[in-house]
Image 1 (cartoon, helix red, strand yellow):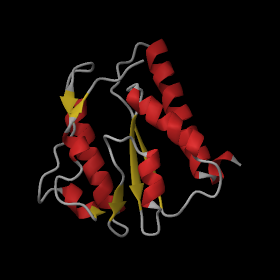
Image 2 (cartoon, one colour):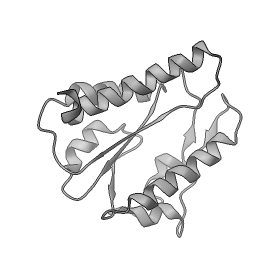
Image 3 (cartoon, rainbow, N blue to C red):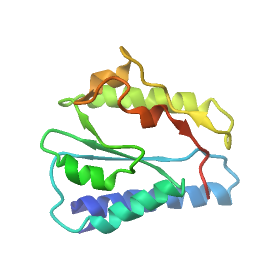
Image 4 (cartoon, rainbow, N blue to C red):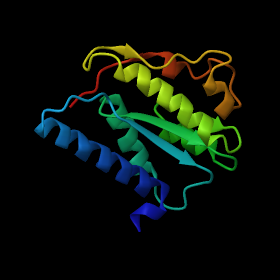
Length: 155
């Protein structure tokens, strides 16, 4: 079953997001580059390399922005192979999903307030902000890729 594997889940998520972008285009709806989050707590049990390669390619072509997040028990070496090189994976601190989603929401709020098609910035992580509460194992500002320029989404 496709949904039972890390690679299958990542492929399915990208399929859904790219199909939605096509619907937006057909109906003339403007959109920003969609984010795809892969959150895992273990190791892949089946083939995942094809989905990882596709994810990195879709990210490099700016069709999606791929983020990889590990929970306790996640194989960070594998996540580093899945995540785009400019956006390395992060380890979630315990079960702090609420803090993670608050950070995502703040980042998206900042992006959505900008004109579609312009270069913009992700919510800049700083010491004391919500992002520090959800991640562990990295210094503050270590997720520099999120503070890097966000380029407009490509079709």
